Length: 167
Image (cartoon, rainbow, N blue to C red; front, side):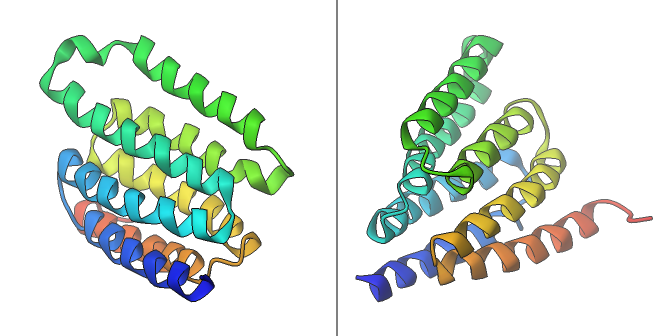
């Protein structure tokens, strides 16, 4: 079961790596939906429930964000607040220790610029969130997740470097 979970984690990782090489927010989010579906199974198999439930919500969040780009009625800040409240509620439900909160804190931090920002802002925020996920993945013994986080951090930096001039 552990080996199968790691294989799924590496597949999800490859898809997320590809996502951050995309330029527009919609393409990033669609790739991340696929990655999150695979990752939720990965975390479920590891018994990492806060990571798993975070991925479930992330799927709906990313789909909703893509839909709101097409339907301006869905752009209300009320929907953003609802997602944040869902994350907070789930945080309370899945809490076991401070490290169990890292995926949910990362998700809350990530949703705001994903909801409001452009692809550069999403990538910058994802960089910080992947650091929180890295700590969580080490905690739950997800080799695939930790490897994915390290490589994704490097990938995001490369993607950003192509788009902005680093001082």
